Amino acid sequence: MTTDVTYSTLRPESQKSFDNLLCLDINIHYENFRLALKQDIPLTGITGIFGHSGSGKSTLLRAIAGLEPKTQGKITLANKTLLNSNGALFLKSEQRGVGLVFQNSRLFPHLSVMKNLNFASKRCKNSTLTLNEIIELTGLTPLLNTPVTALSGGQQQRVALARAILAEPQLLLLDEPLSALDQQSKAQLLNLITTIQQRLSLPILYVSHSLDELQQVCDNLLVLTNNTAIMTKKSANEHSAFFGNIHHMIHQLTQRQYQAIDSTVQGNIIQPQTSLALPILSTNNGHGLAVISLQKQQILLPSSQLVFAEKITAERLVGQPLRCFILASDISICLTEPHNSSIVNQLQGTINNIKKDNTKVLLSIDCDAQEFFVSISAYSQNKLALKQGQSVFLQFKASAVRTFLN
Ligand SMILES: Nc1ncnc2c1ncn2[C@@H]1O[C@H](COP(=O)(O)OP(=O)(O)OP(=O)(O)O)[C@@H](O)[C@H]1O
Image (cartoon, rainbow, N blue to C red):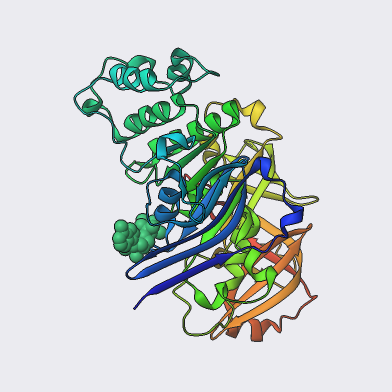
């Protein structure tokens, strides 16, 4: 059976400003797989690429990097044509201005860190940063004489990142860069990736099948899915729904899991959840709990969840947005304000929408203009006679508020 994957966005040509866009209009066909993608991606911040295993994430990065000779169509990067198969133009990988870091760092194993970097810097110069500045930025100074085979996975990935940015790419592609690392190294490397993006104003495309990871660092999300029922719909909105702000896209994916679509739909790809980026009011309320703020209400979570931003002092964390998520299954509903409960988070909200899926119900609830998702059984919905427009209380433990570290 051929897996036919078609992605499209329908923005009128006249409304495009190409200067700051990666424009993709491509077709890649293997014996059992076809990827068709029309999508413009802004060249700002970090864009996550998410999807099922086999949905074409790595193939897409390879096509952009010029490593996929079967790519048909057109790719332009800020007005520079990388590929135009009609005009028989296929820029070589090294001419594209695109850096690529894979899951495995692919360094020269017989050389030290410094020799790996020297080798790269002989072939390409970075006019913004010196080699020393890149070494400092990536925290490699103490490791320069170490053979790369003696480095941990996280350290090897830092060398791979340093090597990639030495070439001063216009776009950096990261293909599952954290997948071989432990949790602490993952958190450190995510910090480094964000720092690199900001210091160099370098747009990054970041492939991962970990939504937690993407939620932590991405501004936008492109979702690839071989869900032909969704992707072949004619409406422009349906198509553009697959690219957008990270939090919005996670909410879109959450809602889609409760839509009765035809049998071609593949299994669920995320756990239904509320994705948040809320300002920190306090890093510790005196009881080991941090406080983040909705407009009028507050959410408590374990202070230990703030470790992600470990280099920043507690005072500087206050006012910064914290990215976190709460699984829909971790929130319960109460009709009256719960006064005698050990559960620390109790938010008042209004039911916006109710979606049913056999025995499960997904409630979309507005709390201070923030959308929350709550999944309960159809039995509970009946018992409480929940209706659209009804005022309710959401309850969840501090530990239900998760960041990437949780
Ligand atoms: N050179 C190739 N020849 C034939 N089929 C290929 C080739 N490269 C990839 N494919 C097929 O293309 C499909 C997409 O593969 P790809 O590696 O891009 O998916 P992915 O989304 O990155 O998956 P994963 O998350 O598992 O890494 C798969 O079905 C794969 O078998």
